[in-house]
Picture 1 (cartoon, one colour):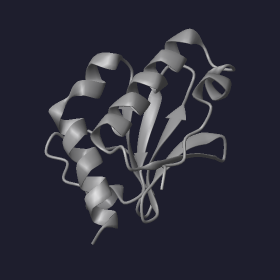
Picture 2 (cartoon, helix red, strand yellow):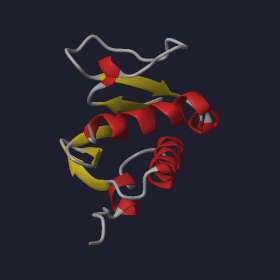
Picture 3 (cartoon, rainbow, N blue to C red):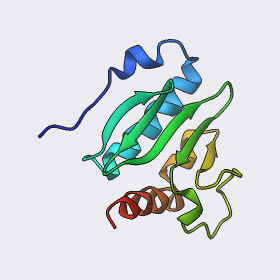
Length: 117
């Protein structure tokens, strides 16, 4: 069965070039690490699911958040997770250099693993 994908160009067409590029880089990184994730648009945001909600990309005017559904359960040795929700936490990303970090990679993989247990 093929995984769900959205028309990313259409979705990003209303955002600035900088934020579109940042979101595209983050999306590519997520799907490079976990190609079996389904990609959907919910509440005007990019959602990634496997056995439920794993993470989402939320675009803002000057940054992009990578939100984790079970963020309070993720290891965060560098203290980069933000938020005060019951379970959700996010990482604020302002440039593409941050997307390739080992810390972010580990968080994405751990978030997927949490949905498989």
